[in-house]
Amino acid sequence: MRKKVTIVGAGNVGATTAHWLAAKEIADIVLVDIVEGVPQGKALDLLESLPVEKSDVNVTGSNDYEPTAASDIAVITAGFPRKPGMSRDDLVRANAEIVAAATEQVTRRSPHCILIVVTNPLDAMCEVARRSSGFPRERVIGMAGVLDAARFCTFIALELGVSVDNVQAFVLGGHGDQMVPLPRYSTVAGIPITELLDAGSVARLVERTAKGGGEIVNLLKTGSAYYAPARAIAEMVDAILNDKHKILPCAAHLQGEYGIRDLFIGVPCQLGASGLEKVFEVKLTREEDAALKKSAEAVALVVKVLPEQVRPAGAQQ
Image 1 (cartoon, rainbow, N blue to C red):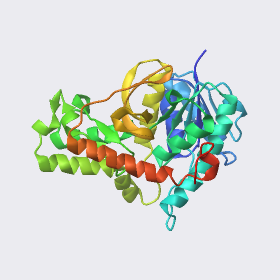
Image 2: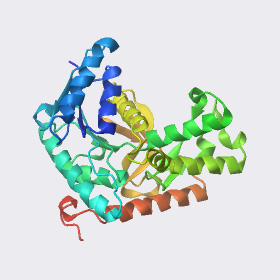
Image 3: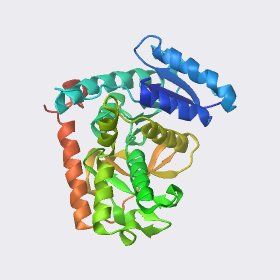
């Protein structure tokens, strides 16, 4: 029997994730969205493309959660984008309600699933999903680092004029401007980029990576990136469902690793059938450690504004 993946949110990211998963024949897919007809229409359109792809997976669209029962993985992409005049705190509260409701609906029907959270602000929404589900940290993972590393790889390959297949990039920290790309751990055919590029070029690529999402938003004018985020999600799903024990940068709920506790932070994670199998710790310089701690502080500030309904029992406002 094929595995089953639920994707909550049939917008650009969710629908494109379904496309990648279906084309690679990774799992049967259920697209869920509150807008009547949208998940059904996109699911049917995708399903009708699969004979050309020679893929036999099933794709279903729904406005309710009943078809999601017994999912192996639930990907949560639903949420509001930040709009003009909306504060960060407003966005956090609005998306926290959406993620909490989606998590409760999915986990009620799939109590053994693994959650992959994509909704922004990513690190805080992972915490919402963890609290709402009551799942152990192994089964709540955030998608950010795979995307950030892919962006860093892209910029390195373009700068050096080499194949992306030769490039391995390393990022830590929160998703967004607070991420911590690590140039000395980022390599081209095993050679650190710090030996191939001058310090100014490295700094420029690091800054572009940290602001990669904003660059696309500015170009599109309306909307944000979805091809690369969707492919990153598919990579995580593939690693879990096929029990690859693959090491990917993901947002994990740290319990003392890197000196950080009780926060979702991007770190190297080993993913397999049980979800998060292991967090890998690497040695950091004083400057890198300070940058990671600063990133964690930024995440903690966002988590503090989560609404009461997604706070753990006994927590103080």
